[in-house]
Amino acid sequence: MALRRGRMAALAAIVAAGAILLAGCSGGGGKAAADLDGSQLLTIPREDMGTFDQNFNPFSNPDFPMTQVAIYESMLVFNPADGTTTPWLATDWEAAADGTGLTFHLREGVSWSDGEPLVAQDVVTSFALQKEIRGGFDYIDTVTAVDDLTVQFAFNTPFSPALLDVGQQIIAPSHIWDAQSDPAKFTNPEPIGTGPYTEVTNFQAQSFDLLKNPHYWQPEKQKIAGVRMLAFAGNDGANLAAANGDVDWAPQFMPNIQQSFVDKDPEHRFYWFPTIGSTISWQFNTTKAPFDNPDVRKALSLAVDRDQVTSIGMQGYTKPADCTGLSGAYDAWRDTSVADSCTWTARDLDAAGAMLDAAGITKGADGKRVLPDGAPFAFDFSVGTTSSDWVSVGNVISQNLAELGVTVTVNARDWADVVSSYENGSFDSGIVWSNNAPTPYQFYRGVMSTETVKPVGDQAFENYHRYGNAQADALLAQFASTSDEAEQHAAMNKLQALFADVAPVVPLFPGPEFGAATTLRFTGWPDADNPYASLGAPKARSAVLLLTTLEPVTG
Image (tube, rainbow, N blue to C red; front, side, top):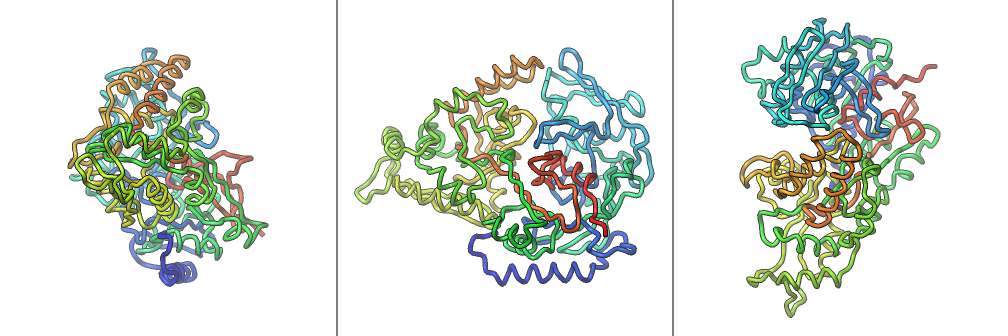
């Protein structure tokens, strides 16, 4: 996805993909495809993986394509596009009156893809593995199988956001996972799931297919034959595949999408980019001076021209963020008085300069700013080379900050290296995505809670910037302890005001859910008029709604 990536590399990638599509790859492990060709499979590019490794472990490798979408399912599915919740592996549930527990009733007649029945012990095992391998769910005290179809969660504290948090955890079969001596390292090459497409076939380094689960509990919704994933090392190759008509669903950033994609076949092609994704922010390592000073963070924010960031870096696909930090998914929670009164997300170089001067970061004779100890105020902006849109955002920010006398170097490199520096706390600054959940609770917890702060050197999975605030802890606890909407909104308004006051990260824009598709081979896609799922979320739980709705074009 690098902005100036050579076209030869992209062409080589798409030629390889084309060969896969035409030949219908064979070998590579998994089950053999019977009487199928590529034209029957829903074909999707994965733009951030140059190669695939056959590891369908939903706990240690949760982001592997289709693992938590087509293979494994959850008890309920939340759709961020319209805010609805659909019962899935569970038919119904009850919350304890005091908010300290949940009871889920599993759906009768659900089988795993090997024919074994889904039972409550599968839920117990799944939560134990999730906590052991990935952490989280600290509020859960016990998970108990009351009977084969009833599972009860007891919390160590009232926690109102639990329903959608617990309900969207994927469930894996205990009869497979209890037998693993080291479940974190189990690659699970031939997974057993309850999802619609579980049968791995034709697995190769740059392509694999998933065919129908023979025991799916909704066989009438398995209208497509299967899913084919294609690996690309960046946007360029994935976008070329989309432009050439080699994929059906293109959930990635495409520059000039109307011209480069839609206009090539306007009868069948469309896109939908609602701004309901994670907030995209500029984060600073607050363990390093002067980023530990909120006034410095605000000054740097004031120097950013968000109109340029969104129009140039993001092609006009989104809009500038305000200082609540909330994306478009949380418009119902947004306190407009906070958003309207804050000034540090609107460009003002004079104000930015005055704040840096007050912090002792002054201009030298050459116009470059220096720290109080005389060292240049110069630092890196880390971003993955494959994200051409975010590299462009970094370049705009670098140019904006140069006008303030601050040197920001866009350090674009492999995403794995970037994320590693975020996780261990060695980075200076960089672009980052926020937690995205049904309420803003997880967003504010991820950027301000002391519970999410890890020491430098320890691996962090959120709050890479390592900022904690005791007042935020209290407000988050207040929100979580009540199910009263008025009380929740009061706590959330105070969290927004606190965020605006301390600027733990600098929000840039709400992330658009990039989604483009063609109706040439499949119909039933979601769009703004029918937002039954997000078109930009093949990595999210709600994508199972799409996989169980699409139909092949006949005739």
